Length: 101
Image (cartoon, rainbow, N blue to C red; front, side, top):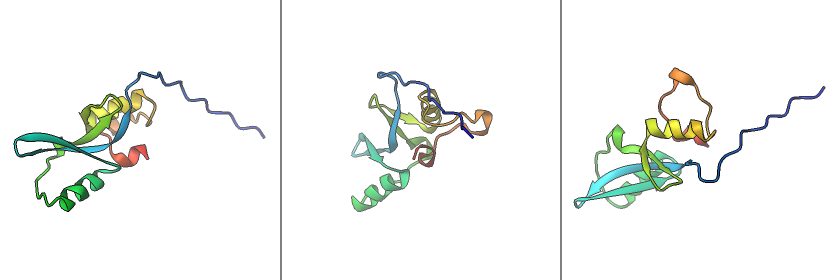
């Protein structure tokens, strides 16, 4: 029995993609973006640096291939467009790092 071959749609070289989780903090009046494999890694780095900051859900997002920090909602839209995740329609409107890898 032959199984159908799944051929993913090609990704354009300049198409924006989600690279990694990130959190955004303000420290000493400067906005910093802390990247990590998962959001927990970002928070772990804050702890290692001795920073005890509250990070709101709006400040938990992702970094893109265009070096932009984006919200979980915008990240989901980018990841769907780049075929990094499946579009679950209204059932999912935000991206979590576990969706990527």
